[in-house]
Length: 454
Image 1: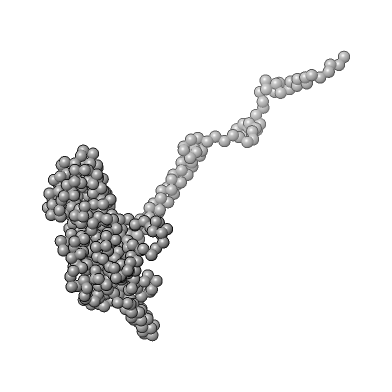
Image 2: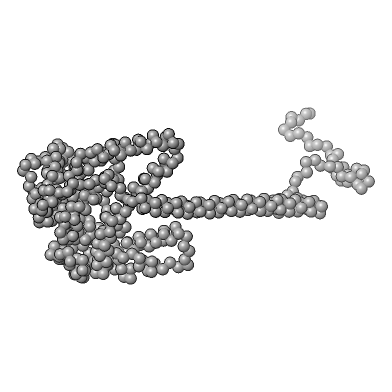
């Protein structure tokens, strides 16, 4: 999907396809199978919402037409947002649905955040909590012109700060790496420490032994790409042709990703992922510095895009043919010693906080164990009391001459295994009744089916 450059600029999506250098030396089969890698996200927490809104708006012919004639200022000051009232009904319906999905997602994030911080609220006021998100209007369920204006302005502001945040993140990464190096050396004895320090210094010196790096955006750097990546004669270098070759999505501008792809050859002079001394995080920071350098010198209207006109004008400057020597990251540290000391103090504070929390959790665990033991003791006491009560009930029933009771209180009768003779109170046998004795003396009935005798 090709978008209007100013639209791409403000949303800093620029190209929805990752730009890659063209290698004319590659085989035909490789060229056919090579598919541009889809660009990642912008780094914004509402990146998906941003992209989906753009895609939906691009489907409306009226809005697309206005977009083609809009300039950067029209988008920044919100004039373009007013055109939202004229888009088709199905587009507005889809935008309303996208906003409801985004609000639902934000509510889930808020709930998860509150749950993780153990904040107990009787009733969560989502409307108030949603105010902290600036890319939409939480007071209206439908997607209105104000939502589009907020989305554009917030994305523009956030993306302008994105590079600065990346630099700060890299600085913290470097300080952490140095902190861990120093802590590791402290753990060694004198002999091993000196040996390890020597090894690390040798790796650092080995990393610095690399070919000269051309200044990004200079004629030497572009000619190298023209020759080695594009496979063309360096004597026939043409800036206009070069621009069109590397405008991979053919939208008429070089976006940030397309520019960064031009620096791969220079970065390969310094960084190799197979080498222990080369840090790939540093390589990405170097790539960012190169892109910022080109944007500063070429992007005259500061729209984060390089047009053909801007590119051609930059080739006419003195710096294009005679640039200053490019200083790589290894020429100076990314932080000062004072910044490192503050960072280490911050790490110690966080470590102490984690220890306090771990101790609190340990105490809570011990308390739970004690409570578990107390509950187990109560359970056993209850079982013993039930058994004793049941035994007393059985003893009482036996004393009263009642048959024993079952576990549920029912009476249990046991059949007699041997019939005892009746005795009188003196212990003598009681004679049977005459009728019973006469009955016992009757002859038995003759057997049946026997032959008769004459």
